[in-house]
Image: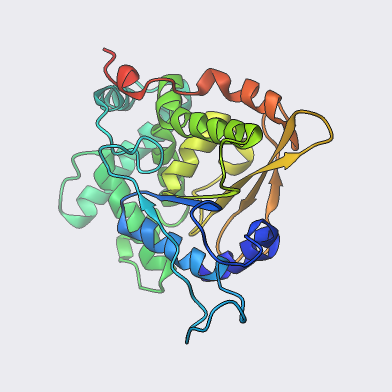
Length: 300
């Protein structure tokens, strides 16, 4: 994450205050309450906000940057831990009566769950339990550990495809998209509008969330370009807001697939292109923006 912070500094350093020091009026950082998300933000910001050599007399090239951690009970954007009975109801229904695009995934997932259960000698009650094992297999492999012999039948292709499908189930219906991805879309549009009309002082906003946070956002926006696999470690999506000669502004979307990528790839915004005027961007996502989380979550 430190290296990615340096790459972001090279691209967006011009947005820093002239003195190069952090101020709460120039930067807003929000993080999920998960410790790994807070550490991710801190590591990235250590590089992004590395102070100029002549700025302050300190023994290390580092300055503190405030990371605002969202309380789980208030978080509807990043970790999305706020209670939502409707979410559980819809996902339970999806696992029993899946829409056509999930039928094959569920069928193959059930077969894999039975195979893994037999292999480890322990019955896996739900797809969540299978996901946790598949996730562990990917992590073990990533760190060079030897996988159990039984994993050779399903790793890596079936495991990665199951994980991808499992994450998509979090936003697998139109209503799930609106709840899971619509909250962050509403927040993004509101921040862009506030920046345009001068009521938002910060020019830099950092959100530290989870891989499924990104998957939900991409799926809600229907950005197929970024739904081909699970987001990599440190995957970062940037929404840039550019001034234009007219009264409107332009939205540009770029993506870093992992922490090693120095230059981002440009992302086409569905039904809008890239760049996309702010008016058209808001219009393209308006149907999926979540207006009232608690009301939507209390539906039966």
